[in-house]
Image (cartoon, rainbow, N blue to C red; front, side, top):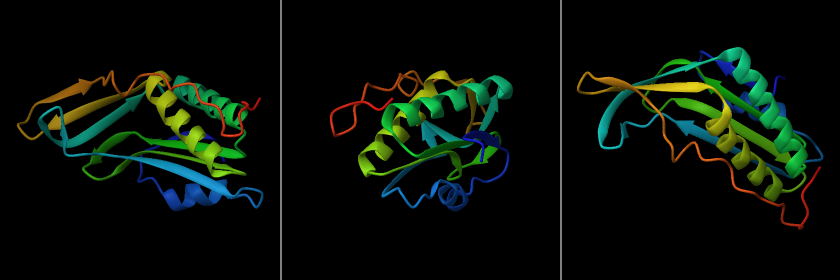
Length: 156
């Protein structure tokens, strides 16, 4: 399975989770980003995602590799939607499996934060009043904070 990928169809979290299952892992953490019906006081009807796919996949794969090395997770993956999405649909899915839950949580958080910060993906919001606009959420695009696994030393 490719660690980072795009899809234009609904994200299947169960399929992605199954691909990360590993008998040596006791912990699994995932994050799903859902399309919500509002942003900064405006009623949102739907979203539209675009990406510079070739560059985005390379950078996404780099982020996954960093998370595996940094947190000692066994497997990790991220899938992001492109195209039109309705309210409640999953826009992005991140998962990590590790021998222990702490590392899985840290890796999943790192991956989503870094994807938001580094991967060339653009979001256009379509509003209830008929307007639309490309959005850049600075708060969402901050780089991931430094984190060390609970046992006190980073993984390499």
